[in-house]
Image (tube, rainbow, N blue to C red; front, side, top):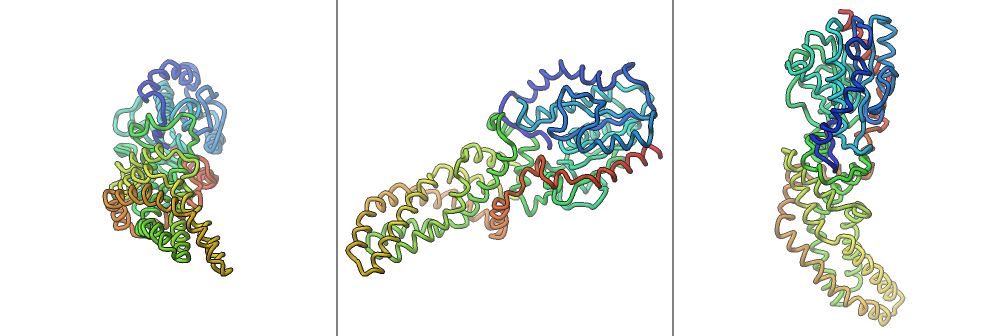
Length: 457
């Protein structure tokens, strides 16, 4: 992924700290005079958690190991293969994803800049490694790298979060959409015809449709792109897949609650009045409907840092041109300030009491039913004063507008899709390590064939 931000120091600080250590790894990888000058050098960048800053660059690792092994078999002593050692973290290891990526980019510059002048270069990366290799290739292709583009024979990107099929040729089965971090700000320049990208079927990391999944696409751009909006928000100890799954579930809960706003507001208004009039069966039906309408939010909100998630969604709204995520962020802000769990708990208690009253009526015991309803009077008053007011205020203001915007942009189907997405868990570890994100065996061979053919051409 690209530049996923968490809390901690700014990237510039991390880069400053890492400058002192990067030369050691770069020199170890291949510096002038430290390794034989072979006709070809392959620089391979592993993915998240596949390597670390002190790793031996000569030891094959991760998804790119078959590519390195294959190149050695094909070219023998004519090629040097190095696996770039870097932090390769997301939120863990004391670095944010963005800070981890900066260690990769620094290492790449040192390793490639230290190559002998006659060797020609093959570049490949997987996942976070593809993120860094892709950015590095754009620099070289646009004349900003440590070597000229004429020395680079080929660039291969597996599961690139910045995949752009409109500007980069694909190998294997072409996938729809773009990488979850959005396209790069510049193309590959002079290297464009030597760059290939591969994305496995179902890997959301490199294949997401921003039109049909604007919320997920915007979330990916914030978490994998510019770290500034959330740099001070996400604790460094946060598990990335858990955070992303919680954000998707909360987004689905907010969206579903927004879609149910007319029902929720109407039922919250009618329930106390119906209880006071003694219409027990109608009151029970209203409480049941209200519980169902609140259920998506209740299921999503338990054990979640609502303020943190609302902040991330707000940041994502700034990069979603559809307006879907911006509308969702307004809903998030409004609903985060309302005690949804408390409301649901109160409504649940009301529903249980009314159910006992309905059972008493069924047994022809109106006195027991009346006693149950009488006990609800204080709860009904509390429900009316502490819940309806805030909800009504929110619905009359930004929340109503946001809900209407949400539905007008995408329609109820998109809300349903988001709800289903959250129920499936989305395998949101696709960001890092789902089965789809690991299913690159055949693609690795395809990429190896491409790199080998380019070197022989």
